[in-house]
Length: 332
Ligand SMILES: Cc1cc2nc3c(=O)[nH]c(=O)nc-3n(C[C@H](O)[C@H](O)[C@H](O)COP(=O)(O)O)c2cc1C
Image (cartoon, rainbow, N blue to C red; front, top):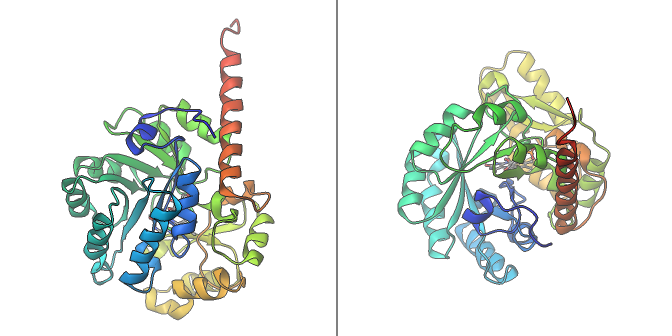
């Protein structure tokens, strides 16, 4: 689809549309990220999703082939547990060696990582759940910021503020371009973000039903029946807030948390990401696993190619902005 909006983020990333597909654990593989890039957006492969460096490398090579050499990105998510970050530097080196120059960083204590990427000549978009964290990422050298509200599917941090409010508060506080994410699933929200003075949006949940996402059809069909009440925020008491689909696992986690769980060990295997991968994404059993998901899934009505979803979002945004300009000049 021909470009509709030109912003500082489309310029920075060299993309047609101001839409970024945030990294999705287990799901941001070569096919999905290439679909984003080929639809004129930017996507980020998640190295944590692969069993080995060889598999991650193969995904980079495959994505480059699927995009015909167009740039794509890699997501580097830092865990709160330092022992889980041992491979981040290796993934970064592998990505750079394969020509990747676009990175989405997220998670805990990113200052050093942002600096390293910046020094390597990469473009770094840091995803932050609060204005304070985002400003410190900007000081650390981030080239762009994704500011994420509590509606986000996955880990929105301990922040309680919604995207719309944070966006309005953040306007004019940043030197670098800012996109907003969390809860965005309709083009009228893209129009609202641009009207707030920001440069684009980051989307995750709304794209889960696209044809290119490698998740079982039964899961996608379940998502089509979800509404804005179908997700829940859990593990807030442990400082590791996680917004997921309401399912059997989520209910069990909620019970254990309410009973006063003091640490992650109290949940045993229930919070293991591999359960989501093996039972839901691979086999379609959506009652099992902590399945990252936000309320914007309510906008998903059919399984279709990603490019069709992007085209619809842009058309909706255009309609919303046309309505805004039609209001101009109404006598007081
Ligand atoms: C299934 C799923 C997995 C995610 N995994 C990650 C991840 O590994 N790293 C990360 O930085 N963000 C992750 N996120 C967050 C997304 O990148 C993005 O910020 C978020 O989906 C935007 O909010 P939305 O879901 O309301 O659209 C995940 C989100 C979902 C829905």
